[in-house]
Amino acid sequence: MATTLRSLLLTATGSVAVLGAVLAMRATAATGEFVLVRGVELEIRGIPALGQEAFTGSWGRASMGSSGGEDGGDWDDPDGVRAFVSLAGRQLRARVAAPVSWEAGGRFRVRHLRLNPRAGLPLLVTGTVRTGVSWRPSGPAGSSVVAAPGSVAVLGQPVEAGTTSIPATGVQLGYPGVTTAVLTVVRTDVRKTSPYTGGGPRAAEAGMTLAISGRMVGASGDVVYDGPLAEVTLGGASVDCAGDAARREPGLTPPPAPAPSGAPASAPPATGGGPDGTPTFADSLLSMLAASAGCSRPSA
Image 1 (tube, one colour):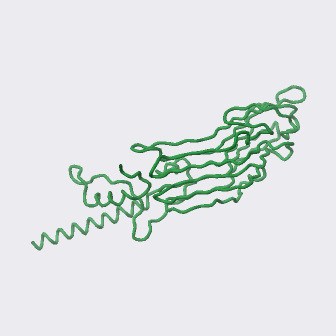
Image 2 (image 1 turned 90 degrees about the vertical axis):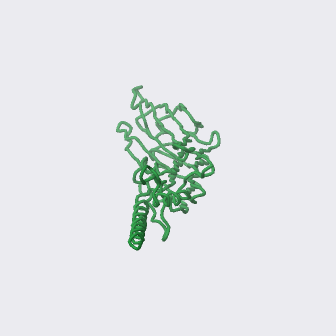
């Protein structure tokens, strides 16, 4: 009897030790949920024929990891985007209130965007642009882009979602070797949600992207350039409850937060590890812990 009791105690002690090791491993490995929003992402094509140098940069960023909290945005400009873009009323917000809600968004107005300082007119101006993404356990993910009709304009001409052709001059664009031009502007308002197996949409993306290309004609009627000029994304935001955004945008993921003292981090549901597929003691306890953690949708 004593020998049997001693064996049972050793087995229980071993099970607890294994359980602790598994919890510690999962806490370290978990990527967690997160949200991300950027203010302006700008890419300018390098075009020697127009004297235009290439540029790529982003300005404004807010993000939040699974540990929860709120980020009101960082408007440092290490890339130098402000040499081309001026904003007004700029606001960014990323918020995680686990397990209640995950959300991110931006709100601002583009005073002007110029590809070069010689331009006689701003290439792009906007009214207030609002973008947002969200996910809550009580419902599917949401994605929104809002701008008043006619409030987004290229060279003073309103640009709605879709493709717009705009006549221009070299003076307006700041290209001395160009007499006339026709710009093609493709505006895409991104409102995207992605479903996961066994549940509704749990990831979302939002943002306004304008891709601008042009056909440039010189004084003698020759085509100086015909192709892409620039692309700008305003208020690009994403929320990913399962952490897939980490794989889409490596390097932008906040580091995993350590588990609070005395409490394990979110863990995926465990599978049965006992003989003939039945849950072990450790599996059962892990499943209980995982049921209320992370951003899993509640059972019906």
